[in-house]
Length: 136
Image (cartoon, rainbow, N blue to C red; front, side):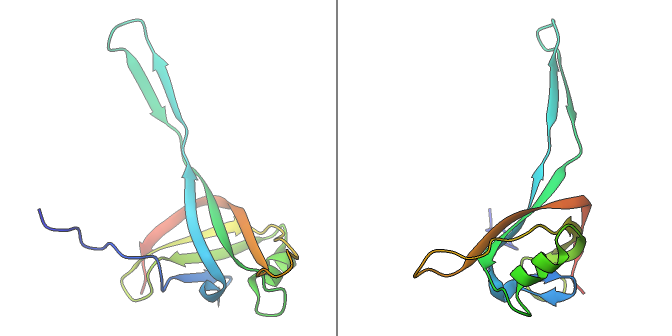
């Protein structure tokens, strides 16, 4: 069997938040689904009924905490509680897989430990479902 095509190391990504590119400030950006499965076992030997619920998505990100104009931390702080639009594209270029979605902005961390980079790590709730497609 030949090796799978389309695999790549996660680098050179595109992370656009409200039309501003922030990939140069992040070291993690991913959509994570939580999708409950309900199972009912009945009294017969092969009696199993299952239902898969709709996924609830979270957008996880981490990276540098930049608290000045052009910084994602400042943009999130300014948008706190509001909805922001995101395009996540794991590999830059035309015809690449991407996801478009809306999240609720939450307050990022502020400050840190002496001698270390100021960083932030957030899990933002996605509003509805992401739309998956290809970049143009």
